[in-house]
Length: 389
Ligand code: MG
Image (cartoon, rainbow, N blue to C red; front, side):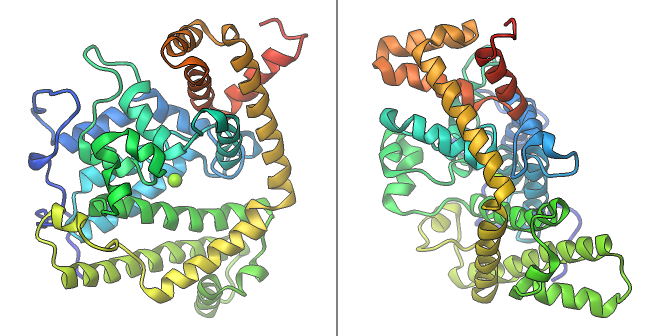
C-alpha cells in the first residue's frame, strides 16, 4: 500500500475537529491549531504526563535504566498508532492526543499498584485505571484559570475511556452510553487501543529478554516470534545476540502494524461507514487484526502472562508494591491529616458531601498520582521513625 509521508485529507469516517461534540466548558476555537492539536498540547503540558516517566510499565523504575517506563511505553503506542492513522486517513491529531493520555490514570507500580488500590477501594466503588485517566483530564489536573481538568474535546475523552464497568458508565452520562448500549468508539479510539497491545506485547518481549526473565528458546516455540527469529537468522546467520533480538522485535511491530492496516482497510471498505456516527453503530470494531494474527497475538500474550508477569522476580516486586500501596492507603484513610495539606483539605471536603467514600476517594486520588519513587519515599517517611518528616 502506498502511503504518503504527509497527512492526507481526512476520510469521511474519521473524526473531524470542526464537527466535535465540544468541550465541557465552551472556549473560543484555537487560532493556530485544530481542537485536537490543542488537546494533545494540554496533555503534554499536564503534570500527570510528566509523572509517567517515573511510573512502572512492567519493571519498577529503579530496576534498570533501559526498561520501558509508562512514558516510553506511551510514546511507542503513540508512534505505532500515528503511522496507522495516517495510512487509513484517520485523524492523526486525535489519535496522538488519545494515545498520549491513555495511561495517565495508572497508579505507581503498574498492575500490582492498580490491583492493590482496587482492593483498598472495594467498599467505596473500586478503582479503575481507565476511569482514573478520564478523571485526571476531567477534574484532577488543576492548572487553568477557568475550569478544573484540561477541558478536552468529547472525542478525546471518549478515546481515553477504553473500558468502563456498567455501574460507573451509568454515572458518567453521555460518555458512558456506549458501554451500556454496546456502541463502538471512533476509529481513532479503536486504533489507540490496538496500538497499546502491539506496543506492550513487543516491548515486553524485549524487556523480558533484557532482564533475563524469558529466553529466546521459549520464544522460538511461539508462532509469531518463532517465525520471525527463524526469518532473521536465515537472512543474517552470524548476527550478534543483541542485534538478533532487536531485529526480531522490530519485525514483530512491523508485521503487526501491516496486518492491522490491511485487515482494517478491508473491514472499513466492506462496512463503508460514511461518518463517525456510522462507525459508532457498527456491531464490532473495524480496526482489528486478521484472525490468524489475532490468534498469534493471544498466544504471545498468554506466554508473557505466564512467563514474565508471573515470574518469581516480578512477583516478589509486585507483592512489595501491593504492600506499599495497601499500607499507604490504610494510614491515610485512618488519618487524612498525614497527607499534604492540599490533599487532606480535599479529603475533608469530599467527606462532607460523600461520607467515608469521599474521604477514600481523596486518598485513592493522592496515591494514584504518585510515581514509584514518590510512593516508596512517602512510605519510608510514614513508617520509618528514623526519618524526620
Ligand atoms: Mg498502555
